[in-house]
Image (tube, rainbow, N blue to C red):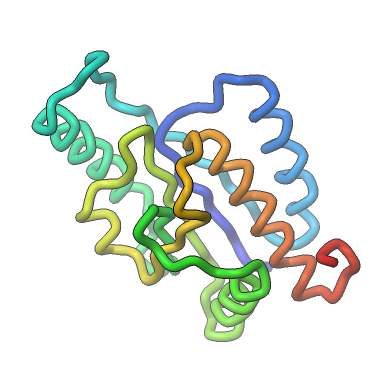
Length: 160
């Protein structure tokens, strides 16, 4: 069974996001070993300077790098990533499994995204949309899409 890790910067504070993430986590337990790792988001002032943002992203990057297993297939969620359909994500996940990629790690940054050095570690960069979403919602959306990918690969009617 494939292992999927969602490595996130920041905690889900809102109950509705946590409830949705818990529901998809439960659904995914039939298809993979899911792990959600939350790393603390660096605190910044209300209107941070570019230097303050860069320093925070660098510190978050250090924490992220310590949690990525060497053999994992890493996918960074970022706005400049490739737009993929649900079917293409299903193919990517299935391709990882067939090539021996037993561990897929998705990276979700905090409010200011991911440090470039972390993005450089990723085998794939994936974008959900050119629109901006809260990073907490992105986690729920990603969990749903990973669940959909497994459903597509299983040939279920979930994906219509």
